[in-house]
Length: 167
Image (cartoon, rainbow, N blue to C red; front, side, top):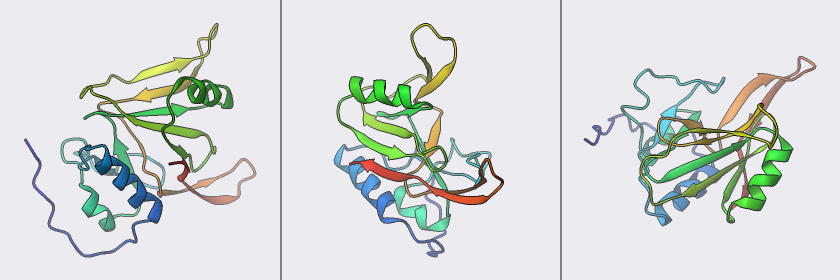
């Protein structure tokens, strides 16, 4: 069932150019663009029914921070360490790559022929530590162009933006 389209069309927020580029890539791959969820500046889901009623790309002007849901043929690879980022770059085909807003580590985005993809944790050989994830159905990552507020290790207030590394 396709969720009803929301009626709020008042442009309240500027949609970043990088977000529009990402939407173009989704459309080029013939992927569903009704996959966006509102998130807070802390990256947490803002609405309880986020996954049941995702927003379409043409509704992104109604909120400032967005997450992009995996699944429906879209997969996100999230590297939590430079070592995992290096391995993912070596193993994955050239793909859309985003720099995270806080740790400046990459997220990889690619399409697949499979609608449902299970989230999986990534570990380096010989270690039990999680150093990344493959995020599929039921998971989201911050959408490129999203800005987050946080305090760095010195206590300084920082605004970090998710940016395109490789298109």
